[in-house]
Amino acid sequence: MILEMIVFIYLSLGMIIPGILAIISKNPVHAVLWVLVLILHQAFMLFTLGSEFLTAVQIIVYAGAVIVLFLFVVYMINLKREEIWKVFVKKSPLGFVIFLIFIFFFLKSLTFLTALSPHFKAHLPYDLTQGTNLWWIARYLFTHFLFQFELVGVLLLVVVLGAVFLLRKLKEVEGGSL
Amino acid sequence: MVPFKYYVVLSLIIFSIGLLGVLLRKNLIIVLVSFEIIMNGLMIFLASVSYYTKDVQGYILVFFLLALAAVEAGVGLTLVVLVYRKLKRIYTDEVNYYRG
View 1 (tube, each protein chain N blue to C red):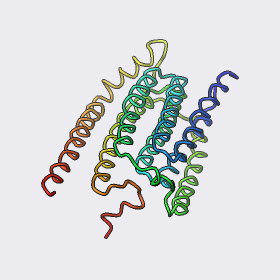
View 2: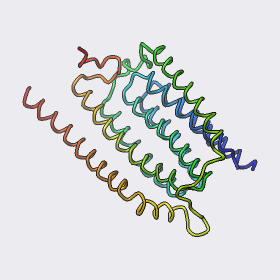
View 3: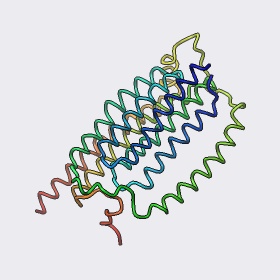
View 4: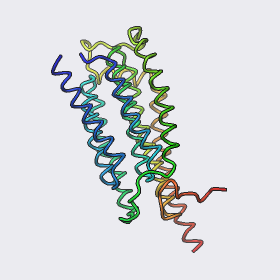
């Protein structure tokens, strides 16, 4: 019990502090690396929440692909040093008001959710004595959610084709017009 | 066992950090990074619901969210590179090329 609380507090501090440092850091490379720290802690929080498969997928997909993609784009864009001085937008009070409105609705939904949580019922229950977490995820993913799974695959294909198409087309237009 | 409410509050805090980043930052890349932080908050919430109700749907939604985060990063970074090539700057309050 006490060990679980210590692990939870460590993991949550390891997610909150890098998150705050990521959104206030001036250099985009530092921000992306702080998000990497956040993602590693979140992967182990998913491990404590009982899913080893999602831990592995989180580390592979986020730390291996998405963060590297962000870092490549940061290096490719190559901003000058003096341009990264002012961090926040000019109309930041307006954004802060929108943020407070969101927080109000979040707190309302929080009280609603905690009142509702003893009445949660499992629609697709699983039993860890009959199979591991990965086995149950795979079982439901390839039977009950098969259409959605295929749809996500098509979506990833469309994104790859769209990225290649957009970047190529602009280069042709530039070469033709200049 | 850690109470369910703590996970909800943690996911809310991380969602709020990401939302502040989206609303207040100038750099478009860090806005996209803040979207990733928002998705991480949602993932904690869904996985904790799934853990406390012994239901597998939350884990599957986390799996789909991972795929959608990759999709969002791909499309968003493509658009950032397009904006940078066109305008040579990526700050949200300076990109007013299409303003009427």
